[in-house]
Image (cartoon, rainbow, N blue to C red):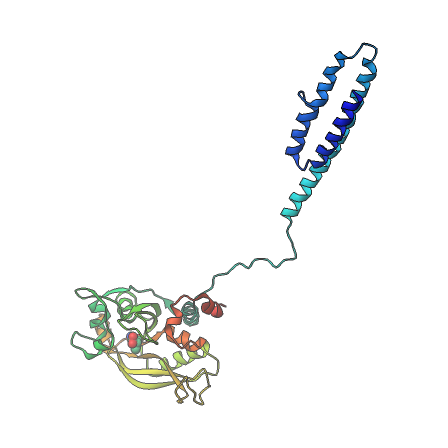
Amino acid sequence: MKETIDALRREIAAALSDAKNGEDLKNFFAKYLGKAGSITALMKELGKYPKEERPAVGKLVNEFRDAVMTDFKAKEEEVARAELAAKYASEQTDITMPAKRRTRGGLHPTTLVREELCNAFTGMGFTVYEGREIEDDYHNFTALNTPKDHPARDKQDTFYIGEDIVLRTHTSPGQIHCLETMKPPFKVVMPGRVFRCDDDATHTPMFHQMEGLVIDKNLSLCDLQGLLDTLAKSMFTPDTRTRFRPSYFPFTEPSVEVDVSCCECGGTGCRLCKGTGWIEILGGGVVNRRVIANCGLDPDEWSGLAFGAGLERIAMLKYGVNNIHILYDGDQDILRQFRK
Ligand code: DAH
């Protein structure tokens, strides 16, 4: 028996030191210590020995079994510790690593300009009116003193979507809706999308305008000048100057084109302002008496001031963008720079 045990002891020592994980240990236990294991088999052999030898041999087997059991338990603990250490190592987080950046959304330059303008105007008592993008010919043209054969219609390449139904070419039809529905005196701004069949470095088929309309008694061009000057200073810088140039629009009389001193050079002349020191930002004027009469008001009693500005144009000037398509390509690396 002693030799059998010694041989088994060597085999077991090797098997135990080879065991690497819980699975190996389970197999080890079944092979040596379990019901059908080799050590249990030794116990069963006791019967073969003469009666007087049995206690001594039994003791030998028992001691061997206990020793193997102790080694097994120790190994079991060792494996469990190693497995836990491996699990911890694999789950370790380096809290000193820089965190992943969350990308934050931001407002589009055109939206920023629209909000700034709306803020400036509501601060001066204006309300904001959102018109409709699909207009009839009457509101988009005729009521604005631009009848069918009028040459000014050619300047605005129109998308017709039905007989006398158009995608509005400007926000000016909003003037007619306001005159038709609001009780004078009133002051409104109307920001929104407009559509023209036009596409180059400074034009896109869809762009944004903001219309302004003031209806009150005894308004003159001087009032418009004061209003737009205040606006230009709040839009650009406090030292921005404005000037009016005579112009023509069917819906205003007199009509003006409004320039601001160049935001790039301050008025000394540069490439942006083509050496003139001035940049055109909007059109406006005193509302044509015919427009007021078209909407059922008495032009001898009520007068009006109107203006219309392109929001992309202002955004491009303000943020130094030289191609309008940059505003529409959706390139995040570019748009991110304008975020407040
Ligand atoms: N609607 C004109 C355009 O799109 C801009 C404009 C000019 C609007 C003069 C006005 C105005 O209200 O008075 O070109």
